[in-house]
Image 1 (tube, one colour):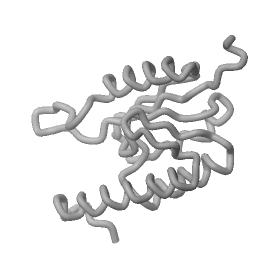
Image 2 (cartoon, rainbow, N blue to C red):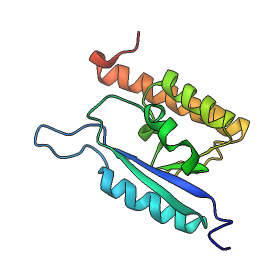
Image 3 (cartoon, helix red, strand yellow):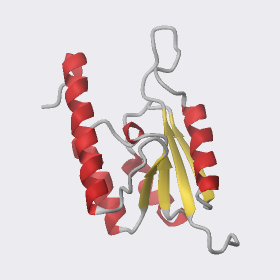
Image 4 (cartoon, rainbow, N blue to C red):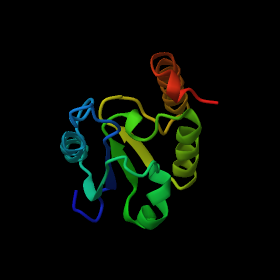
Length: 143
């Protein structure tokens, strides 16, 4: 497959939190980026651009979407929590990407998020994560 036929992917890595010593909780954004790039190569795609959000602004991928829109066919994230930890935000992301025919691919969750069952699974995972976060981090409870 030549590069003209390859799907182009935005690699999106997001580092959510750091501990008191400044060490990333979970996998670092740089390690996420490397895993996503490797995944794009495995599926025969091409990396259109890499976007690393160090979560200093509180914005979501949709805040950057308009300036990146025409540069990619889909987005590759390490896991769904990189897109959003909010069910409301994730639903909006899913809606916009579906309307625009953009794929959402997670390296960790091996689910076709572009199918109805996959989108339902994505929402169930997001609801579960938001519920667990509200139990273990009461200050982050959703309204």
